[in-house]
Image (cartoon, rainbow, N blue to C red; front, side, top):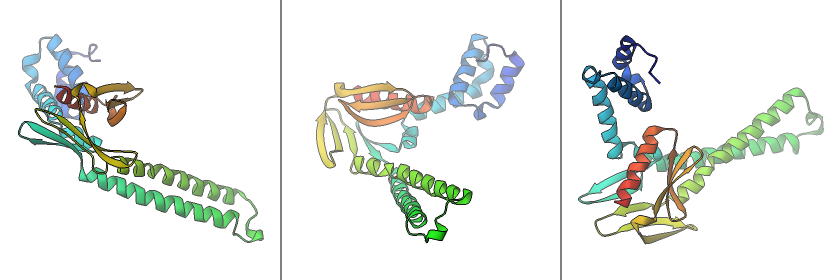
Length: 223
């Protein structure tokens, strides 16, 4: 990625490295080390080390809507309050948008007086706007499934066992899980953490921080 850059250009990139993505920082560090410039880029190394530490400590798990609570030699994975509130807000907004759009479409196409029901360019545009509003509302309502799926969710691991609390067919169940039951699956642009055939968490596989975060969680569950 940086092989065609002059040393001066690379050092300029180091000065502004905080504006680079983590992936670009790693590429830059690799290129500098390859050219024997590792001593000149301690600040870049420090930033990368800090981000890597945050990944291992699951600091970025909140971006996926979860958090890890460490208790001695055990830990728990739970939904964050912000993620729950976001799902609830999406549900309310989805209901409002879809209902408002539906009522407006109904009033225009069915309940409008005959002389107002004639189609024109403006009326067609209006229909499209309300139709799109309904579609957006329905999309927001996807939060209903996510909210219900993770209501009461908890994944805990101790020295002796792994316990999963999750809703299966809407019923909250508590199951003991073997470490070997966890798998990572790459599906197009998603990285999915699964237990047996059930998906638990998923991340953007093209986002290296999200990808490494879910990989770190997988390794800790399997260890």
